[in-house]
Length: 197
Image 1: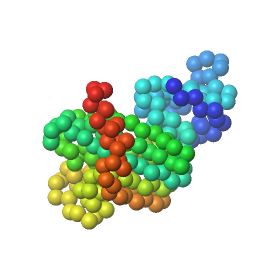
Image 2: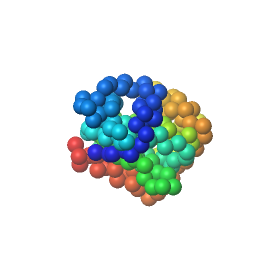
Image 3: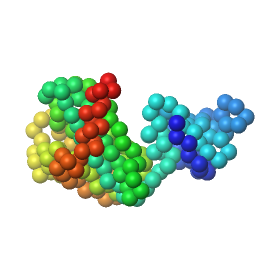
Image 4: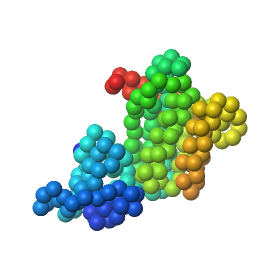
């Protein structure tokens, strides 16, 4: 349960500008409440407490990090197509901002890689980063997104369009193919997601 020591009115404004609905607090001590993506923020005089099963996105909106982030992504499949999971890590000079893994249903390995990239970019945007250096170990996905490879599969073409739209929200971005050992943490989180299910 994250506790953010902050200016609660500034936090409220940040949520409102992101389109999150604010409601009055339930007690005399609560200034306001807001729910978003499976979590609820409760504001007190000088802090916001986030409750719920998935606080990362709400926390991202409240903290609004800004600056540059290194973003790692990986998709994994049990069979191809098969049950799939994704992993992501967002890092700054200050350390890991957020990381995680989750199952994403049945799909091909390439679709899982795209799902991981979309999740990681969405979180980076929600944290308010202006610049992202994105790294993944799928050469195919990296080269498709950068326009070096054609995308013949209609599903992958749609993924590429969605990724490019997300990337356009950043002031600056780069996308690089890295060896699996450089992407080890995202790979591990994707594989651990299979165990959690």
